[in-house]
Length: 225
Ligand code: SF4
Image 1 (cartoon, rainbow, N blue to C red):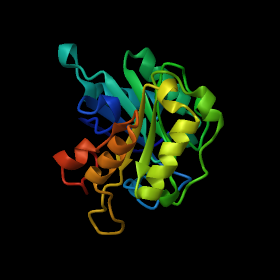
Image 2: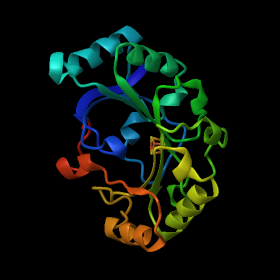
Image 3: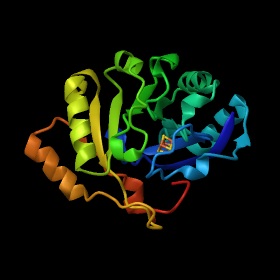
């Protein structure tokens, strides 16, 4: 497989935010979201066998009572690489809780059922709207999470209407609304989390406001955290 980085950090997003986690970042993505904060994973990378990935994850996870049991496969877009389902299977067999972060454009049904899928639905201001694979709606399970990254009021209205029309709150573990974090180099603006919180409260939506914890803990431009 082609890997950009494997590292240990704190899970920054979703219902497991704050937990220690090993991240396996796969190289390559077929989308180009305006506010993408992992463009460094588009190209390059290093070839790893599945054995070598498992070895590196085990080395970072440690042993005994303090062993880290959470692993996230991310990217880039991890479902572009055909070995990804096999990697997930191997990590599950090794006893890890396995999550995958995907753009929503690829079909998630190729993954083992026990993998926790965090599936994006791209909003209009991402520049990649209409890329969501509708087959994923039927493939989502009660442990999965659906995430909308929101840059504007237009994105918020889209996310609210999409979640309601597909009754997402009842069919997954959590619907996440995350404000775009401003680019540290000024290439795109962020959305004020307070503004998003007020819209959610005003509409009484059954969603969780997601903040990228790692960007508050470390410098927002830091890679590998
Ligand atoms: S899908 Fe993810 S990795 Fe790909 S461009 Fe969008 S944010 Fe970046």
